[in-house]
Amino acid sequence: MTRTGFITLIGLALGLLMNGQNKTITATDLHGNWVLELNENEPVRAEFIFRRQKPSENRRAAVTITITLLEFDECLVDYDERMYCGNVGRTDYSWAFDNSSGIINIYRSEKWLRAFKEENPDEFKSLDVPDKYHEMELSLTVLKNGGIGLEIMNWE
Image 1 (cartoon, rainbow, N blue to C red):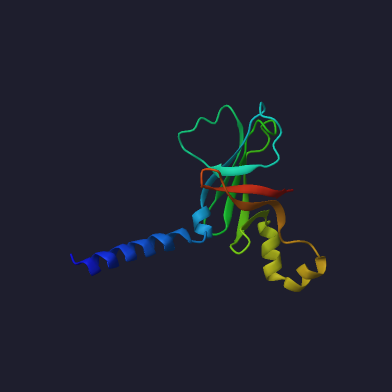
Image 2: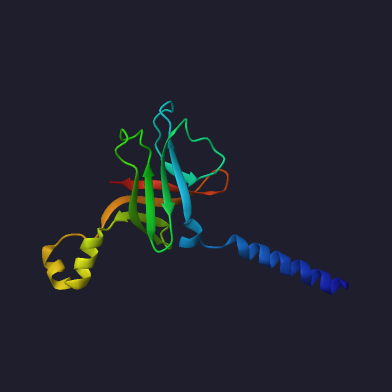
């Protein structure tokens, strides 16, 4: 290989490597399970951050909340039964991601209310009721290990 070809190859490799570092996060990158551990023995924290769930971790010791972000704006929130004395389990929600601000909104949107809004938009507007009930607002944050976390900004 000639010297010019070798230098061109190195330049191309560096260009591809640097371009990969500036990749923006999309909604597809967020799909999957995110876990918030709430351990009774820890001191009170100022921040609450959901982290990617690792399948091999033992979750018995901590109370957890698991958010599963799915396709088609579907979201499941699984509250540990120890938090609410076994009364609350998995709940269906919807979610939206604003790429420019890095904010994820998780909300409940009643199916019958959404159908009523689509079928009777004028009557729905006259009722002055929201079509979404916000549950949680999360912000993308970079963790100490370089990974991504979801920090709770607002929790209804």
